Amino acid sequence: MAIQVKVQKLKRKGQPDKWYGKTVKRQDVTLKDIAEIISKSNSVTASDVYGVLIALVHEMTFFLQMGHTVKLDGFGNFHLTIESETVDQKSDYRLKEHVKRVKCKFTPAAHRITGRKLSYYFCEGAKLELKKG
Image (cartoon, rainbow, N blue to C red):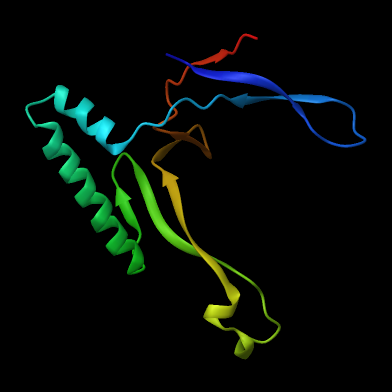
C-alpha cells in the first residue's frame, strides 16, 4: 500500500495561486493494534506484547523526565525540551513564569548516504500515489 498525496492550494492573500502536495492521513494505529500484529508473527501473546510496550512507555517517561535521551536502536531518539520566553536579564528568569510548556522531541533513526544527506529507516522504500479526485 502507498502513501496517498493530495494536491492542495497554498492559501496566501494577494499572491498568485500555488499548489503543493500534502499526505493524506489514514486512521490511527494504537499500541494494542501493534501488539496484536506482533503476536501473530511469533509465539508471544498479544497481551504479553502489549504489556511490554506499556512498560516501555512507562520507563521511557521516567528516563525522559530525569533529563535523559532515550535511544531505541533502529527506531530513533527521544528527549524533552522546553518552549521558553526570553528575558532581558538572567536574574529575571523564572521557571513558572517563562517556561510555556515541555515538549518531547523525536529524531528518527537514520544513516548517511552520499555525503551529508540522511536516509531515515522509516522512510526507505515508501511508495507514493496521487489521490484521485
